[in-house]
Structures are given as structure tokens and as C-alpha cells.
Image (cartoon, rainbow, N blue to C red; front, side):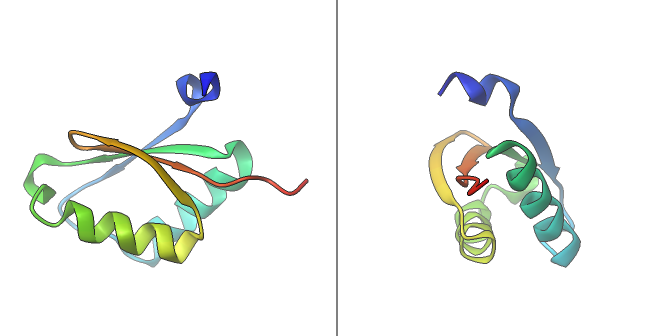
Length: 78
């Protein structure tokens, strides 16, 4: 889990999750296996729905959620 210290952080603002955000998360997961998603405070009521959508669309695993930060993991097959 030491790699999480070097994880890419993606900020998700009030515009929410769209195709561009999903593609960026996929790209970062491919590059580094671990991604931290930081949600704005205004999204706290819908955060769980967004996390579930992202996990499904990126085929990643949710490792942890602490406050407004979620950590995702996807194993590289290379």
C-alpha cells in the first residue's frame, strides 16, 4: 500500500462525473494502478453514487473512502 503515497490525485468538482473524467481516471489507473479521487464538499451528498459509477465504468476496486477522498485500485496486466 506504500504506492498510495505516489498516487495521482484527481479532483472532482461540482460539475460531477462525465466521460472526460472517466477517461482521465482510466488513463491514470493504467499508468499507476492507484488513484485518489478528491470530491468537493458540495458533492458530499452524492459522493457514494459517483464512486459507484466510477468503479463500475473503470472496472476498478474501491480500496478506501475517508472523508471526501476515495482510493481506487486497478491491477495492470503488463
